[in-house]
Amino acid sequence: MRVLGIDPGLQTTGFGVVDFDNGQLRYVASGTIITNHLSRADLPGRIGVLFEGIGEVVQRYQAQTAAIEIVFVNVNPQSTLLLGQARGACLAALVHHGLSVSEYTALQMKKSIAGHGKAAKAQVQEMVKRLLNLPGLPGPDAADALGLAITHAHAQKSMALMQQAGMGRAKSSSMLRSGRGG
Image (tube, rainbow, N blue to C red; front, side):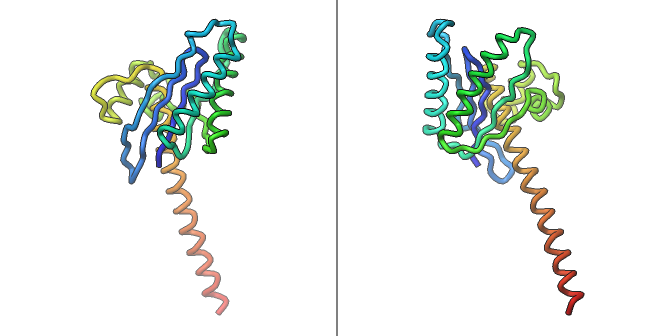
């Protein structure tokens, strides 16, 4: 399974792509989509850059599923609204390209990657480096995106195992019922 993680931001959006096969993670790519070359007043331009940039990442790396960070409420409501619009552009691009999208909070990702939800950015970067056996630290936005992709890969594995266990029980109980009727 190829997973694309997105850490949305209006100025810098991180992306990270990992492959997850038989419990093994493999780094594919990561980076950032930058919009700060546009004026702060050009919100539609920034949204367009994010939409196109995410689309380009999806096409280039052929992700099968995506994970994106859920926006939290900042002290500054205007910043929260702007971040929400950046996140919306990313979501729209992912859906436009046919990807299923799962959402995780920063706390969920940090707990999954570093073992506790209050992990600092540097801790997330170091753990992503270790988990993916990278030669150096990824940038903070790319590390968060890779962390989201890793979190989703592990969540998908857990869900698959739970479904298998549930189906196994369902088969056993249906076999028992059919055995009693004969």
